[in-house]
Image 1 (cartoon, rainbow, N blue to C red):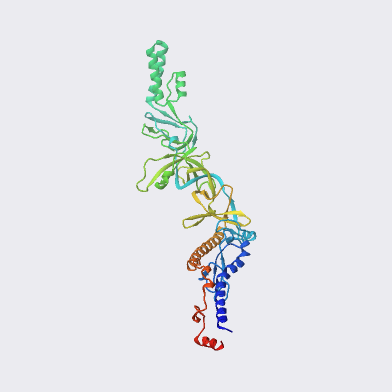
Image 2 (image 1 turned 45 degrees about the vertical axis):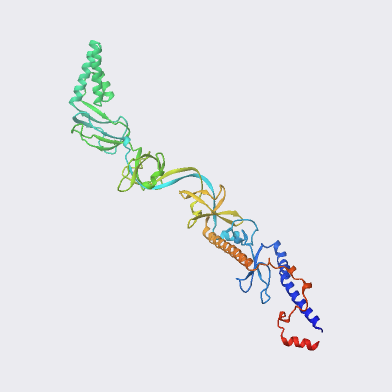
Amino acid sequence: MSKSIIITAIAALAIGAAAGYFLAPVDRGQSQTASPSEVEPEVLFWRNPMNPAITSPVFTQDEMGMDYLPVYAPREVPLGDADGGSGGSEPVGTVTIDPVVVQNIGVRTAVVEQRPLARQINALGHVDFNEERLARLHPKTSGWIEHLQIEETGTKVRQGSILLSIYSPDLVAAQQEYVVAMSNVERLKNKASSSVLQSARERLQLFDVPAHQIKELEKSRKPMRSLHIHSPFKGRVMNIGVREGQYVTPNDELYMIADLGRIWVYVDVYEDDQPWLKIGDKAEMRVRAAPGKKFVGEVSFIHPTQDPKTRTVRVRLAFDNPDLLLKPGMFANVVLQVDPRPEALVVPSEAIVRSGDREQLFVAKGNGKFEPRDVVLGISAAGYSQVLEGVAFGERVVTSSQFLIDSESKLREATAKMMAGESADSLEHSMSEMDMGGMDMSDMEMEEMSMEEMSMDDVPGATEMDVHDMHMQE
């Protein structure tokens, strides 16, 4: 074998090896990705099976001849798909659970609905008299109590009921003046006598002489010894301050009468809750004396000053009390419904999953699929929470076992983000290390290579002994 033939063979072997190195990955990569591309996600990069830190943007093999493993782009839906995924474009964190498992873990749902909702302020109330329907009766003149018609505290009275009879010399004198004035009018029939008659009648009215006794006096023309005091309205006698035969003056209280059909309740509201409060707001009240019964009233007055010690403002509420179940002196649990929202979009409060500064719901999409939603909440009351953003009317949200679903969703979401981050970092790192843009096989021309320019130093493993042997054979 001649020297030229041997050198030519070695050169051809080197060129073939170089060409195979650069061309083989392209063909091999295509063969590896051609079939899976139809059913598998996009290949992000290839990873060394023995050292995951070593990656390649194209298919290749390691020093031991082992194939690099593909790393695929994460899909949006399959992260929670127990059946292998549906291939849709759903948010990361969506979980799909077998219907049997859904039944076993007790998943319940509720519909997003619209209903009236209001902010709630809880307060301790104190039941008191309605001051607008409270009367304290005093005589207009001094005298003696002749007879008490109402002798027991708590007695129910009607408007106009006779309470007592009182004898007063002043009242008798006023009656006599009125009788004389009537006689003068009949005899003189002039304007002056009519004026005197009118003045005498007005004096009797100022002494609170009832109209029926004035008519009786006009008919009989005889002064009566005792005059009646009547109840000004329907109510209950809360206090009796006199007894028969007692001498009384205008300073003495005869009766205290209260109408308990509508009562007042006072509550103290802290200054933080005052901006939401206004007259006319709805109030709900419960008392221990009427278990299970709820009384509904409204805010009737807000005091203009604040207690400097307790930092509260006294608020007055008005409640109807037709059955007289509410009694002054009672304590009550009051809930003020302030800042009402007539058509609020609400979900049950137990459906909210709170995690740090995030608030989430899980929306049931059907077929065991649950989608996480970040929501913006408004006010909460009566077991419901207002949703300002995140869900729509009519959707179904998970109200029980959502923490199990949330754990699975968070785990899969974190895995997806981690894989996406690693994929991007590894791809960028690999592309920066393996830049093949500067390699051009067109620069290698066989015609320019001469046998004289080739040196045995270029052949790996060649020694001076090998060259001498080839000379001897030649």
